[in-house]
Amino acid sequence: MKNIFTSLFIFCTVFISAQDSGEITLFDQKLNQFLNVRDFSISEDGSEAFFTIQSPNQDISQIAYIKKSNNTWLEPQLMSFNGAYSYLEPFLAQNGNRLYFVSDQPLDKTKTDKKDFDIWFIERKNKNSSWSEPINMGKPVNSDLNEFYPTLSDNGNLYSTMEPPKGIGKDDLYFSKWENGKYTEPQLLDENINSSGYEFNAFISKKEDFILFTKYNEKGGFGSGDLYISKKDTTGKWQKAQNLGIPINTKYMEYCPFYDEKNEILYFTSKRNNLNPRKFNTISDFQQYINEGENGLSKIYKTSFKIKK
Image (cartoon, rainbow, N blue to C red; front, side):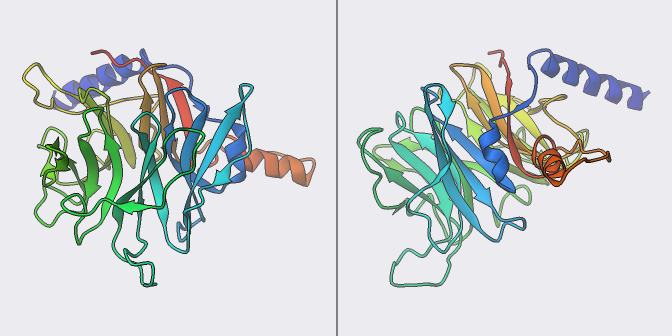
């Protein structure tokens, strides 16, 4: 009987989520040239987007951007601050004039040894001006441990992933409150979000009333990493996180969510795989088939998705 109720609960969760989402499609064919692409952030006007490109085993990680002209995405370009270190997880904030990201580059430019991963940012006056040099956020946001995946609400509160020595699980989600012109010590989100397993890659809404994130191999999930959502109740407490269900989640890895609240579009990374053996007439036919679509590599997908408040 318990199994019947569990199955019914999962079915209802999937149905409720699926009825609010549309077709799952690739963000744009321009990104098919990359073996691994992940971590997506798009401007409010939809004219520029930032993402991470990586080598097959993630040994090399760089941040790139793409701009739109006459309703067409142009060729991707590397951000100028990329160097001989890892750069990933861009998040655009402050009306598109500040880009947060994560890197293991040293604090001192005269040093060459990698450090732990910290949260950094660059800024500009407007869309037509140049970006600044990278600025480390410093303490208390950064520590001697790894910090990942920055995301900010409109009030400046910052959410991130940490590998906590005193957390609930393996990776946990934290937030630092922007107060009196500075950040407070990172605070662990409660057990309605974090668990004894892995929680990471959070996206916080502008009004800080819902949060999207990944749970890894969660009981009752669909396998590997699934996207979840938690909303705040009338008292400001986070409610129990719910699986977004099919078709967004699959048995493959889904992670790195970004939600366009204005247009109600969910962007996310997935390693879904739908390749099947077939006959190929030419090498180009073979290459096109394995490079495009759901091929098991990290790609950026999008879908219309309405979040009920």
